[in-house]
Amino acid sequence: MEKHKYLEMLHKLNQEENLEESEIVSLLACDEQEITEQLFRLADQKRQHYVGDEVHLRGLIEFSNVCRKNCFYCGLRRDNRRLKRYRMSEEEIYEVGKKIAHLGIKTVVLQSGEDPFYDAKTVARLVKRLKKLNIAVTLSIGERKKEEYALWREAGADRYLLKQETFDRELFRKLHPDDDYDVRLECQHILKELDYQVGSGNMVGLPGQSEESLASDIKHFQKWDFDMIGIGPFIPHPDTPFGTFQMETEKKYLLTLKTLALTRILTKTALLPATTALGTLIPGGRERALQCGANVLMPNCTPFTYRTQYAIYPGKICLTEEWGSCLPCMKRMVENLGRRIADDYGHRRRIPLPK
Image (cartoon, rainbow, N blue to C red; front, side, top):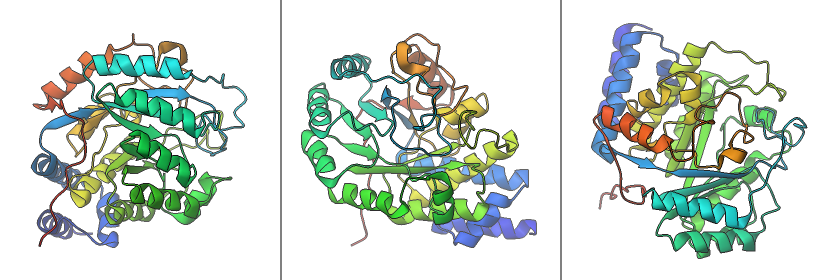
């Protein structure tokens, strides 16, 4: 495609903050550095306009690596017999949450594999205790029944993250041998009905994934109006069926940043993390993501005893750091970009609809 066509698309993107799916495909596939850099600058401008310079911190507690699902890409998959499994007790989780609140981080994220060991009442009781610490609570514990989601919302849970990973139905089937595309979407519907702030997301660089698949993801993010969207690169785990898949690192890195940038422009105020996976893929990846539309960082507050065992992918950065030491590092990262750490709960800003 001629350069002026890309420039026309960028102009349209700036003016209308929207593109057709075919136009998104073209920008994702474009290998002209000048066009890519212009896209990144535009995403950063839109981020500044819609959500400002604040970066929101989410204190992550990975409280169980037990999972009933067998997804082909994930190191926590049920059939990975080489992984040492763990479960944190309710009291352990609460004590870590208390430390996070003491650090001034205003959101705790409780994340695990799909582990039915933690029943609905246990999770609700934990949420109630954490809410008394004057923090927001995000849950990311998979597909559950409507009654369970409702109980946790009633207990005070603010947000729920349930990543789709891909909105390409055929690709979803290849990734999830024991999952149902429509069931997962129905869970998203239920969460929205219950007035959660709802999160989704995708992985970039999956086996069999095309620019068309990614463009579909971006348009689905826009259509569903998700409050949080996690976009990160796929990093193969050797103990999974996709463990030998290879994709050129720089290509995957740029494709992830392009997906992030386009998502920022089309969703305007969504909360977009600079993912740990991006920082693992390329040194400085999180900083670059913050310059391409991201406005969230997630310090890993999982106790060191368990942290290395939550192995969704290998080589994750910051696994051996002392607990809480990543916070000063993240603050420096943000300040070096001329940004600041937010001191509020980090709820999504909503744009008033025209009357």
